[in-house]
Length: 207
Image 1 (spheres, rainbow, N blue to C red):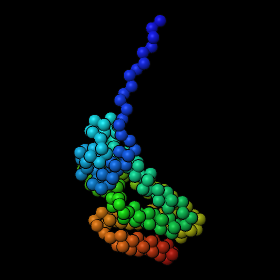
Image 2: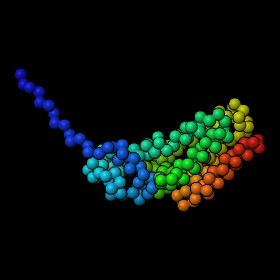
Image 3: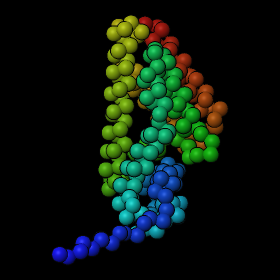
Image 4: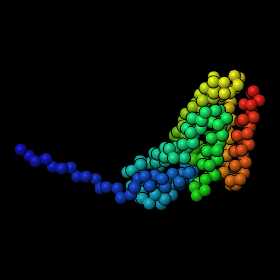
C-alpha cells in the first residue's frame, strides 16, 4: 500500500489583493483605461507584472474588477436614489451623488465609467462595452422607477420616463466631464442645483 504524497502548495501571494485592486482603481479612475500602462499599475499596486497577471489576469480583466469595486463603493448613491419615495427626490439624490463623487476631495475627479468610455480606442471595445452595459442597466432601472411614479400619480400621466432619464444621464455625464476639465466644486454644485431645479420645474409644469 503506497502512502499518499501531499501536493506542493503554490507560493502564497505576498500582497493584499484588495489593497492592490483599490490602488489600480485609483489609477484607472485618474488616467482612463488607454492612458494607463502596466508600469503605472504595478507601481501603484506595489507588485510585479507576473504577480499582476497571476492575481488578476491581464490589464483588461483588472479593469473590469476595478470597475466592479468602483460600482460597489462609489455608485451606491444610484440605488439609494432609485429607492427614494418621489421622482423629484430620485433626481435630487442621483445628481447630488454624482456631484459628490465627481468633486470628491482626495480622489480622482469625474466618473470612472465616463472617463473610460470616452477615452477608449477601437482596440479596447470590450472595456467600452462593459461600461455601456452597466449604464444600460442603470438606465432601465430609472425608466422603470419613473414609470412607477407615473402610475402612482407622482408624475403627470404624460411624463416621458425615457426622456427624464436621458436628461438625468446627460447631467450626470456633464458633471463628470466638467469635473474632469477642472471645474471648481462651487461650479459643479451650481450645475447640480440648476439640474435639480429644472427637473422639479418640468414635472411641476405638468410636462
